[in-house]
Amino acid sequence: MTVPQHVAIIMDGNGRWAQKNGKPRLWGHARGADTVREITTLSRKLGIKALTLYAFSTKNWDRPEEEVSGLMGLLKEYIRKERSTLLDNDIRFRTIGNISKLPEDLITSINELKDASSHCKSMDFCIALNYGARDEIVRAVKKVTSDILDGKITHETIDEKLFDSYLDTACLPPVDLIIRTSGEFRLSDFLLWQGAYSEFYFTETLWPDFREEEFRKALASYSQRERRFGKTSDQIRK
Ligand code: IPE
Ligand code: IPE
Ligand code: MG
Image 1 (cartoon, protein in one colour):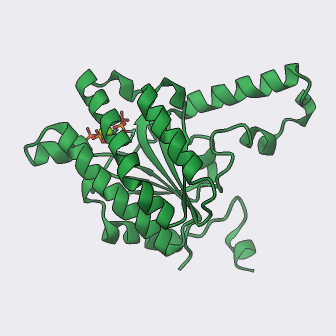
Image 2 (image 1 turned 135 degrees about the vertical axis):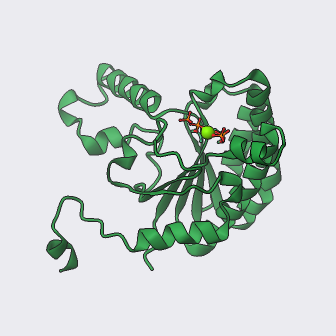
């Protein structure tokens, strides 16, 4: 079986899962965090090199204040609780997105875990926080422009590879597989540049129910795809 190097997941459906179970939305997010645990350790076991999870988008600030602060609290708790699992499994913690807009105490915990895990090499575990792909691209354009003005690069040197290195994902391998749960067929501003040649997997399963068996199904589907990158099937099989 071909295992993808980098899997990215749009973890959707926590709210509907809670509603289905007659609980408040935050309860669904808490159960979603349990799924994150399971999928992370399983990914490491299966030899996946990078796992990126969409946890909070630039648009999610528009949710009710109570839900936003609840999510921030859960993230902080998650970082505290998962520290030893990540370190014991040689997993490096990273983020993409503009984290400077997050609550101060959360930024501190994030940076602390990033530092503590910076030597870990077996897998990158990356959470997309205050992430939006358009925002990421605009921030990258600003950095490129400022490097041109500072004389560090010239505009002639800009190509796809250079631009890629200005994105938040610069340290991560190409995204092979993007999964979205909960039966929605959209990207919601996730990895627009990086997903140019990714494979997609959509499932009706709500994120809190997306456990080992479901993840294995997604990986099995991926391993049957023929990635042609513009070439013909004959060229690929040679
Ligand atoms: C995904 O679940 C988690 C976040 C966006 C933080 P949702 O909260 O979007 O769940 P639904 O889509 O309302 O069911
Ligand atoms: C996308 O889910 C963002 C995350 C999973 C964090 P949403 O539930 O916010 O997406 P839309 O708004 O339904 O497209
Ligand atoms: Mg949703």
